[in-house]
Image (cartoon, rainbow, N blue to C red; front, side):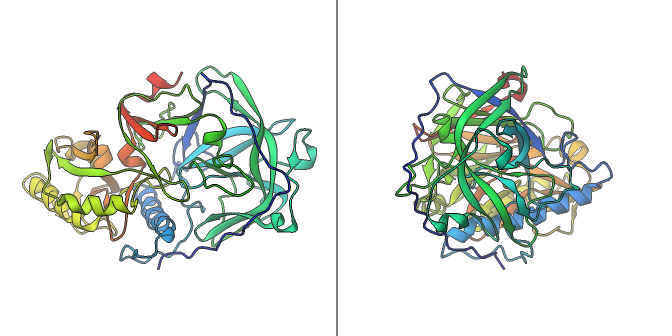
Length: 437
């Protein structure tokens, strides 16, 4: 069963909050840390292939449940979703390092294009573990911390994330980023954030992680102007990220960039915002081996009409609407019939084969996600297939009964740029090291 959501509170502030964005030609680039990478505090050298795949699959189901919660007419995947929320212990994908306050306190936060608010844990908080190694932000020790005046309701300001929630107060504070390429330090003053004192949900946030860095444009409120919840719009009108092979645990050049001078390169397709600011796109088709598959264009048109095709940094796999999925599955089966040995499915993945992606899928044709405007996101074998056991790999596309979600496996190997002013998203296939500066 999909997780339920809590109805948001209406928050009234006595103070009209307005901050001018930084000057033009501004750019901050900071490293992205994959949960399973060598650079992650959650890195587990003894984790097996099955362990990592199991976490990815469980996270996929949980994230799906969270994302469809804003729709009234959607059904679950058809598989039990026992875990809920979008940023619990098993569901983090990429982290960002920064410091908050004066003196600066290092933080590790989850990057999320599915939420707008930046928030961190602020002791006394529940739950907060002193044995996790996390460095918590004690607001009373900072010379630049400033809580926003508000009614008593603001004591329950809540960032809603499916089955989880974070409660606390709104405040402004300075953030400090160390850039990934040259170590320069950039300080951003008076950033709106949530100082969280209570986390609720089945598992809460991983104790090694301090909070969430939301990147959606955000929704308007009567007292807080559009976009000021989101760090993405606080630092300009653009942001981009670039991630390489998610299976390479030692790759050091995954990164996130903010500001009007970020790398918006490659082909572009229109970007559409849901009412809550989540990022949606329109698809025109799916290709395999360069050939557009015979999928009724009305399938994508109906989904586009309701903004049901999402770009999401919190999902690892590619979730595809069932009518399109059936065509893709049948064509992959046909092409694999003489080359690969089919084995029992590993739910929710329906098409699995004996062997390894590295050795046995090398000659398999690429899968293309086609956007309106002639843009195509091309998935090689590492974007198409997931190694689920040492000797089994599966098509990393999940049947979805409600929405299509383009996760990070499909986006790996690309610089993905969001131009919020022009409402477009760009894709450029490249080594992330080339745009890290």
